[in-house]
Every structure is written in structure tokens, then in C-alpha cells.
Image 1 (cartoon, protein in one colour):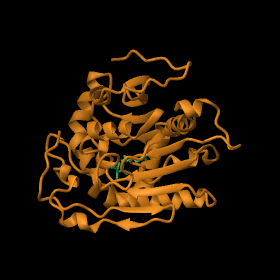
Image 2: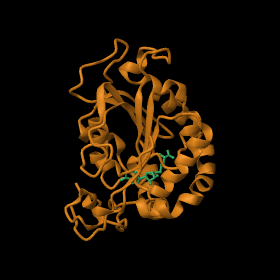
Image 3: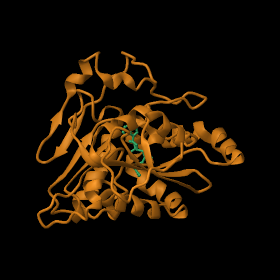
Image 4: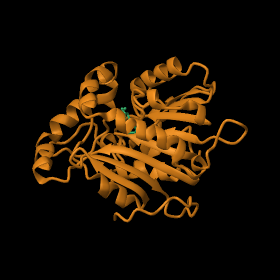
Amino acid sequence: MLLIQPDIAPKPILTLGFGDSETLNALDKDESSPYRLLEEREFGSNCTAADSTPVYDEGAASYDRNINREEYFMAMSFWRKWVANQVVTASVLGKQNISADGRRLPDVLEVSAGTGRNIPFLDVAKIGTITFTDASSAMLDICREKFQKRFPKYKYARFSTIPAEFVHTSEISPLKNKKYDVVYETFGLCSHADPIKALQEMLGALKPGGRVVLVEHGRSKYKWLNKILDNGAIIRARKWGCRWNLDIDEIVRQTGAEVLYHDRSHLGTTYSFVLKRPDDNIVDATEKKYRFF
Ligand SMILES: C[S@@+](CC[C@H](N)C(=O)[O-])C[C@H]1O[C@@H](n2cnc3c(N)ncnc32)[C@H](O)[C@@H]1O
């Protein structure tokens, strides 16, 4: 767990959508702000955790251009389609074939949405409300532009610059105590200062019958590949803001989440999960507990 350091200046929080907009500049002066959980601003030489937001703020404009080729060769659109499908089906509510004819549609939250690379795969006709969050306002600005261009008539989208570690329980979060049917994240845990806390916040934000859906990248199943990942970790982290050698299974295990689906591909470096809170007994008859841990 990272320590709270008083010398780290918090950033303004901006929320947009549903017509609301607020900037919490007061946090800049608030020494007790939990934003200071993000202890380190730079990755240490052994690739210790850090707040990667400055890397993403700086690289936002060229992010899509730079990542396109890597994602193309790894066929990442396949996983993004899988996530988009889970967004409307993973929760117990989603499994009940919710449609637009008067029945309720799922409320969903995307954490670490980045530049909105999942947007092209979303079926908003099957989504009640959608909230996009990220710690980097520059990344989220691009996400918002992309969403508004693709779905100009959809009125139930919200955008909020807030680190995942504070999204649900912190006083500084505009989304404090809000609950969702599906909370999802793609390739975000690698970039968080505290991935365990971030995932705990996601689980905390679930409604009964709600599910967390993840596609993440991390350590391989193979020693030879892990050696390569470990050796290149610091260069990768400083350039891309992500630690690509984290043990994602271990992070999930430490949150105590119940695993309903688990898969690993790309030699074990791409992880897919559907998770539920262990204290949530609302399950669909088709769901089985995945006995992984
Ligand atoms: C590798 S990018 C992935 C973006 C997007 N999810 C995707 O699939 O393309 C990681 C994202 O995590 C965001 N991020 C880094 N630290 C964060 C934190 N503590 N809380 C929320 N988002 C964070 C970065 O700003 C960046 O947009």
C-alpha cells in the first residue's frame, strides 16, 4: 500500500456531462486530500509504483497513433469486442435481456477510459447511462470528443477526471457512493499507483448483481518471457506509463473478489475477468463460480 505524502499537489477534478461541470481547485490547498495517496511521481529503478498521470497527460495527443500498430498485431479489437458485449450482458440485470421497451438498462462505469478506445465497440442502445473516468484529463478529453462524435444523440454519458483509487469512497469523487451494474476497465491496472485499491473501489461501486469486467495485461505464464518483461519494465513504464510485469491474478486475489470468469491469452500476458463482490449473493442460474484461486 502506498503512503500518503503531503508534498504532492493534488490536481483539479473536472466532471462533464448531464450538464454539470465542477472544478475542485480547493483540493490544491487541502493537505488532508486523499489524492496524495499517489506517493511517487516517477517510477523507481526497480519499477516501483508511481502516479503515471503525467506520462499520459503528456502523451495523450499522440497516444492513439502510437498504440494502433501494437493493438493491431495483438488483435486487441477482439478483446475490446468481448468487453463491450460483457458491458451489456455481464450483470444479472444484463442477463435478463434488458431492452429499451420500458425495462431498465444497465448503468455502467468505465474506469481508466483513456482516449476511449472501447467506444467504437459499444452498443449504447443497450446502456442506460455510461460514465467514463480517467486520472488524465488530457486522455479523457479525447475520449469525450470521440464519444460525442460517434453517439451525438446519446444524452446519458458523463465524464469525470478522477483516479480509480478514489472513484467510489473518496470525498473528492463526484461519483462518491454511486453504484453501477457493470464497472469495466481495459489495460488500466498496469498504470495505477495502487491497483489493489483501484479494483477494491470498482467492486465497491457495484449494485447487487453487478459485475466488474476486466481485460488487463501483465506477467506471462512463461519464465523466459517474464525475464524480458522484467528487464524492460522501467523503460516501458517511463515511456508508456504502465508496468507490464504485474501479476494481475495476484492483484485480483488480494481484493477478495469472486471470480466468475478468467482467461489468459498472448502467452498468458492478456488477462480477462468477470468478477463479483464476495458478499453479493445475487447470481444468475447460468453463472458458475470459477475455481481459479
Ligand atoms: C494503458 S492506458 C489504457 C487506456 C484505455 N483503458 C484503453 O483500453 O485504451 C492507461 C490509462 O490509465 C489512466 N490512469 C493512470 N493512472 C490512473 C489512475 N490512478 N486512475 C485512473 N486512471 C489512471 C491513464 O491516464 C491512461 O488513460
